[in-house]
Image (cartoon, rainbow over all chains, first blue to last red; front, side, top):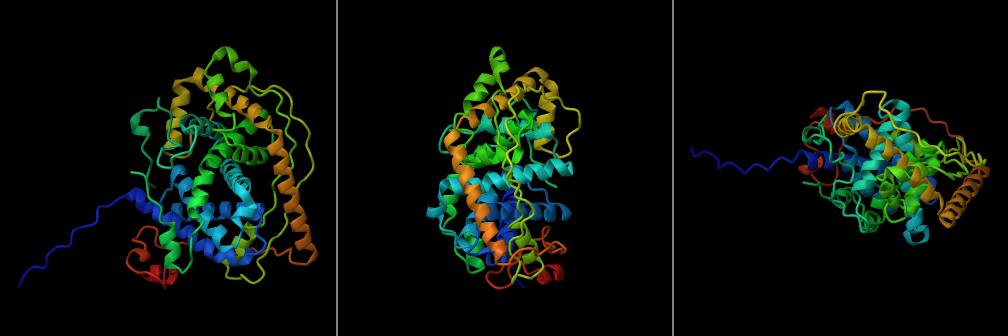
Length: 165
Length: 243
C-alpha cells in the first residue's frame, strides 16, 4: 500500500493566529450587538460597545491561556469597529472622521480606566505607554505595520518579545 | 511579521459586509495613540482621563501639535513648562449605552437590550490650572508581561529620562488643550448624544438593567472552526465545546 503523500504543513504563525482569533471573536460579538443598537448608534454607544467587546474578548482569551498584546488589540479593534459601524447602519460621512475618532477616544479611555481600576496596569505604566506610542508613531499617514506600541529602544531585547499567554 | 487583516473574510463568512474597513483603518490609527496620550496627560495634570482620551483621539497626538511636546520634554531646561494651563472642563463620558447592549446580546435578549443611562455627568469641574510636573516613579512592579515589563525596566534604569518623559506628557496636555475649536466640537457632539439619550429615555426604552453571565468563548486554544469551515457554524460554541 502506497503511503499517502504528506500534505505540506501550513507554517504556524502564532501572532497571526492570535490576531485572527481576536478579530473573529470580536466580530462575532459585534454581530450580536449590532441589531440592538442599529438606528440609534451614537458616538457614545459605539465607543462603549467597542470597549465592551475588546474587554470581553481579551478576558475570554486570558481564561483560555491566550494573551493579546496591546498592539494586536489596537489593530484588531479597528476591524471590529469597522464591522460594527457597517452593521449598525451608521452613516460614516455624517459621523465624520472626528466622530469616528471620538468613538476610539471613548473606547481607549474606558479601556485604560478599567485597566487601572482592575490593577492590570498602573497609572505610571499608562503614562509610559503613551510616551512610547507618541515617540514611535510616524508624523503623518501612520503605517499600521509599525510597532506603534513597542517598548522603548533602551529596553533589553529579551523584554521586547510579546508574551504569549 | 505583523498580522494581516481578516475582518472582511470573517464578516463575509457570517454573511455580512465590511465595506467601511479601509476608511476606518486609515482614520483611526493616530486616534488610538492620541487617546492614550490624552489619557496619560490627564493623569498627570489631574484632569478627567476620559475627557483627555476623547480630546487626544480627536486632535491627534502626532499631527495635532502634541508631538512637539516630546521634543520639548527631551530638553531638561524646557521641561518645567509642562502641565500648565490645563483647563479641562470635565463633561464626563459616563453613559453605558453599548455596554448594556453587549450584555443583552450576550444573553440572547436582543429585543429590548437598548441603551441605559448610568450617568452623563455634564457638570463642568472647572479648570485644573495648576502646574503639575509629576515625576514618574515606579512604586509597583508591573503586573502585565511583555511590553510593560520592558517599560518598567526602562524607567528603573533611566529615572532621569523617565522624569523628563513624564513632564513631556504634561506638555502634551497643554498643546492638546490649546485646540479650543476641536474642544467645542467635542462638547457639541456630547451634547447631541445627551439629547439623543434623553429622547430615548422619554420613549421608555431605558432602564433595562441586565445582569447576565458573560458569554463564554470556547475554542481559543484550538484551531478556529472558520479555518476549516465557512458559513454556518462559525464559532458555534456548542460545536467547539464538543470538539
